[in-house]
Amino acid sequence: AENVAATTACGAVDTLDFSVLDTLRRLSVILICGFFLRGDVVRVSNVVGTLMVLGGALLYQKGSGSNSNSNNKSANKSKLKSMEV
Image (cartoon, rainbow, N blue to C red; front, side, top):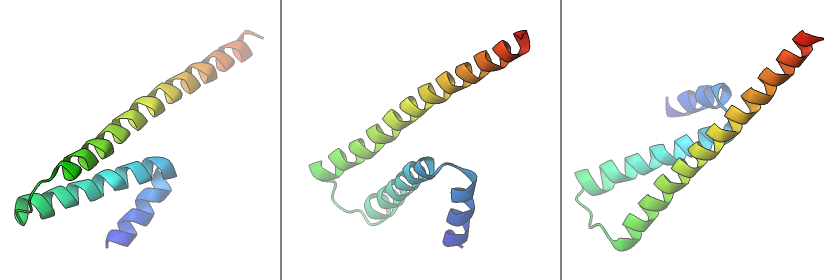
């Protein structure tokens, strides 16, 4: 079931977006199962790794959001120019 859902989701979104979301999904599984349910010891390396994943996802979201906005603005300007002619 997980593979079918992943294949369907991969076709619906950009591959890099899917990879970032999948990394966040795996992080949530590790946090919930490893630390909350099993009670594993939280080490500094665990915290650093978690912060790296979250920071990377936030930076990707911020970067992809600004790129899509600039692409949309360029597309809108081209449409307006073509309408003027």
